[in-house]
Image (cartoon, rainbow, N blue to C red; front, side, top):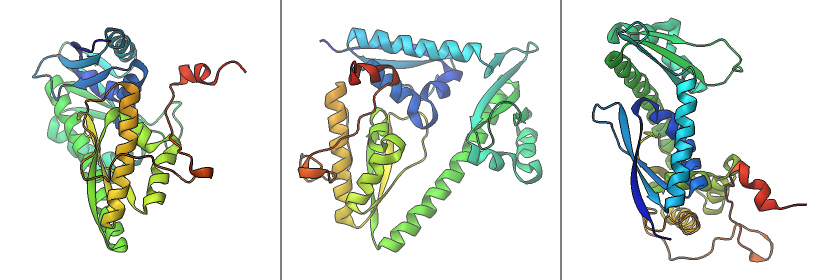
Length: 299
């Protein structure tokens, strides 16, 4: 099958929804369609942002269909409303449950300062059917440019907190283990495979190699996520080798053979045994919900 490349445009303000939290949504689309999707870093001020789709004609059409479904859901949902009074725009962004208090601030001080600095109105939607501890929508209303500016400031607050937490965890673990750390680049489509269902795969890698692995904060744009591997140098290299094997297996399966894999030196291609009886190899794959019956079969 010939592999082709095609450009497909999506509304700029919906890119965050298309990528999804931690890149989960776009990874799912790539796995289900078999098409590689690269979203441009910005729209250049235009209302639409280009995406580059790479794959067979069939996989590209499937990816376009799935992307179109997400765009339609966003348009019909509460997240985006334009020209409320001819001049204003309303945009909602989903704030992780663990960061809601951070964005609001003590006594509402942070959200108040954000509103004063940007000239917009912000409301954290706390009521509704969402359970306690769930992510909350933050509604931002105002001039389109100011709304975008306020959105970036909120995301920057969250990023700074994530990076501070990450540095603290890394320093603490490295100090206890007496080691350093290396970085491993993981293509977005393979992040779910490396983490595994309920985090099972990444736990196995950590236990097998004797390291700590943590993904750096997601910028929501890059085609790769960076995993920080912390521990003794030889153990870090062993973990990087395992991750590279999982990525290569996923690339061969999904037809992404030309994509870059891990940074750092491995010890050559080989099977990774996770301690199953008889030295058998065990690899966890993420199967789309609508394909489970096909994989299991009748009975």
